[in-house]
Image (tube, rainbow, N blue to C red):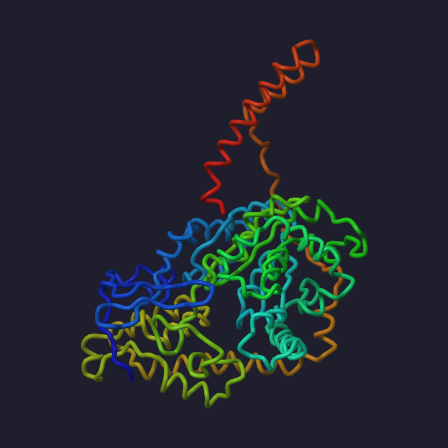
Length: 493
């Protein structure tokens, strides 16, 4: 068992208010600060060299995102009629950009698009959002990221396409609805007839972004291959509904994109490893500059799932002992949790009974937090462990049983995914969804007095008022609107 920290003082009012692995009331003095950039993820350390937990509130403040708070979750439940996913209730998805605007669109009964990249996780929030909104979902498999794999010279595009097909089967096994889900391999889709509008969007978008902008964002230099330089444009337009005309009933063979489809808003659940997800930042800065403007994609940001080694760690496929993998056997799961998972228990049984454990840093408890849907059961575990009534071995046993059951269900479902099923998910086609069954008609829009005055002046000008006077009124109205936009720009990106 790893050396264990002492228990944190105080208990939360309810488990729903828990911020997973981050409920400490005091912060130790930092020796090094946390670092999160496109190429490195590193937690901070204290003066004793101990790795600290990631400070997500600081991340949110740094990148001017909004925290997912109680009011937003209550509104989500009110609008959709669905209880928020446990990852939202427990703070695993902790911040957002414009998620409230997606709720506005859904409430009015308007179509929204869900989009994500490779690898939705078990009991994925992506699937849950698809069910909650009854909306179309697009999943991109970025096998074209091969252009970044300079350290793997033996890897070929054919290899990465083969890997992406395995990824597709993994995703399908999570239970996505084929009628409203489109999964595609970048390399295969770009070369198909259905990707014409996608490439039109990518080419137009690339004209809006300079080399200096992508160089500053992604760290490119004069030795960067040209594939990497164009890659961000492809990633950015994946969030435009107009990149998938066939989904919405448009003609994919047409030379012309649809302004109506382009206006459909997109919600992207994403991680924080790209602060604040650089592709999303680029597309939000430029989406309204497109010929057919697309709304800025809304984002919800997740925390890093805790590595088995504990605070400050990040799960990695390159470290077999950093996480539970969906290919693990029951024995492997048991061994990893028993032997590797960091414990919040005391050093001896006597001390644990006397002082209690620290569930806030206990990895077995964190995993239970991710996958146990019952708030009541989770709160029971939390309080019992903190009081010393529940032992570390008992917490790990509960975690092992939960994880073994999850992985078993996935593996059974994965075994049923045939090539025929996969090909249907990956076939460009019109999707089927219903959206909000009970839309609410929005109240009449408030008229900006300045705009109303300009319109009136223009009308009077046509009846005899001089054109110059009408133009002056219109210019004044435009100036007021422009000033308001400038004030909002920094916080809105």
